[in-house]
Image (cartoon, rainbow, N blue to C red; front, side):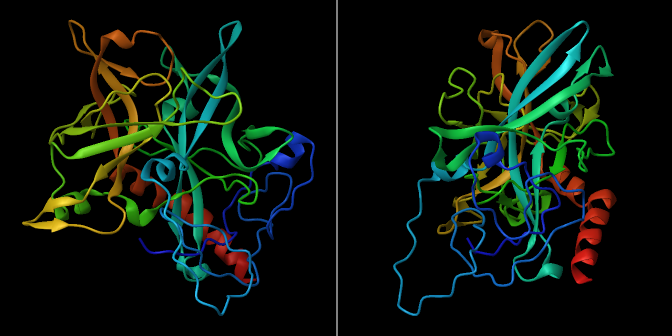
Length: 365
């Protein structure tokens, strides 16, 4: 997989973990302690250098290149790499006369924009719409707080992870697809790379419909996802679970999505459960393809986003993979996946494009 540079043009920054933990921590150029409004107060570092990364990017420090030959970078295990793409999302909302919480998964993607320089671009947080905007009795609930728990690069005050509030409403908001059947939401946000240990999934890793056809991706191909394992949330750090299965169906017809409307879905024979909503699901694109053996490079691409599962009952209905109901014994093992095409369409939407245009225009001044 190619390496590239990520520059500080992400449109919103996390609140600094140093504030939450009561310790001063250096931050990269252009970052601030408070969340920044879209398209404001972002700066490009003066110098950047490419740093090898197995799945995405590592922001460069601006240090000069060493002249002596270096050993090839050590590639971490596949599971460890994929687990760094996710964080654990908690949403508190008003449910009648009491406060309720739901738990799920969110992950980061990198949208390259060469207008800011080669390898430059924007970072977005991705989850399901039913996570970002919970509904009760068909109506959107009043969301009180949203936070994302992520691991830290270095232990601070004995903590290896922190649950940081998302800057929703402080110059940023979740963006949803125009099609109300598509269970996706994205938030432009870039956690401080000097504090948080994460890897975004590059746009080039999306297994869109064209890629599915070109790579001959079909039923029976190996898939895996990584996400929140509610039985072991982790006391000191998050430990996302990785589960494997097979692609079960690429339906030609629309199905009822987790938002209760007809839309496009993939089905995977991989066991998901409460807390897995918003998990990235990857498909293995290696092996025997198009009459030849595909080898080398990163073997997985993002096929879609886990949104729910079917449970076995008389009517074989679906269940969102968010709330912790404790009824896993009725889970059929067939999971619902929002195709990567829908995520691409959302990232290419006029609203997000306008936000990127404003940031780039501001950098040019």
